[in-house]
Amino acid sequence: MPIDVLLIAAAEAAGHAKSGGGGLPQMDFSTYPSQIFWLLITFGGLYFLMSSVILPRLGGTIEERRDRVADDLDHAAEFRRQAEEAEAAYNSALADARAKAQTMAAETRAEVEAEIASMQQEADLKAATQIAAAEERLNAMKDQASTKVKEAAGDVAKTIVSALIDETPADDTVKAAVAGAISGREAAR
View 1: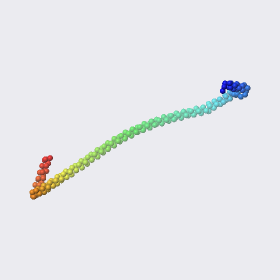
View 2: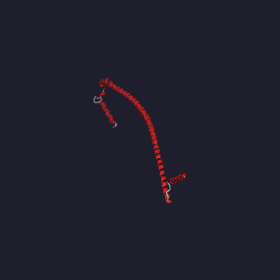
View 3: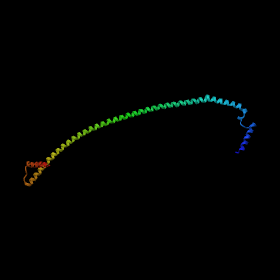
């Protein structure tokens, strides 16, 4: 808007105010005493309402909230202390359980090793007994085989000599010849 238009509008507003028409009533000095009266009553009433009703309630609410927050902080501190005690007890119980488990494992290991050693001794003794019995059977079998081989050698020698010279040699002579052949063979080894 151009400045001329603004100046014209301001002049017209001033003319209306002087003539008692339109304008702003709060700017009329003749109504100031009644305006001040109602202002004092309104602010007095608001002041009384604020100081006697609203502010005490608000202060009580703030104080109650402060107390509740302080109680909550106290409870939280107590719960934290209890949690730390529970954690310490848990760690202690865990350490005790680990120590007991290690002790039990060591005892069990010792028992198992002792049982294994006992079983191994029993097995060694049983094996030694079985080996000795087997050696006895083997020696008996060797003796029997040796005797049977000597008998077979004597029978073969007797048969060969009979076939060669048409005469059957005496049993003592055949036994002496086989024994001499065996002893000569063992001496050669």
